[in-house]
Image (tube, rainbow, N blue to C red; front, side, top):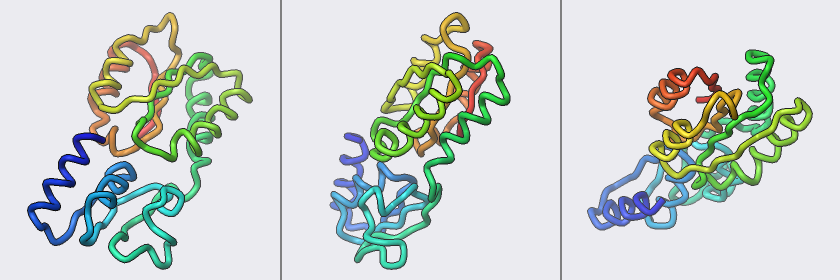
Length: 175
């Protein structure tokens, strides 16, 4: 988030005509620092995130493409993960700590589904892909049956973390 704020400030000084963001955290930062048009491509629940007023009438300078209109998908993803890995009991869950909707909307649903499936979650909010890689490096088959990602643009380069979990022979799901 600090790096994003610095970038938004620099772009504002350069008098760019428009800024395109690739997710919620980026859009929130851009809106705080930017007065010219912002296009989010895509963003989850932009109304709930507070950077547009409504899908029909977004705002004076913010518009874009919304996705994941229903955060229940993350709970369903955990169910699918359990079907794919029947012995799934201990799950490391990684998520973007800069994304406001995850702790308030996604995590409660995932926690509820995990409880119903008798899955113990170890929640690890991360701020960078490098931090996610560190969490995966610290995981072991003795303590972790699977790694679950709640996707945001933070995990846009998912290949490395997927390779890391594969090397450890720990199933992963997300992104």
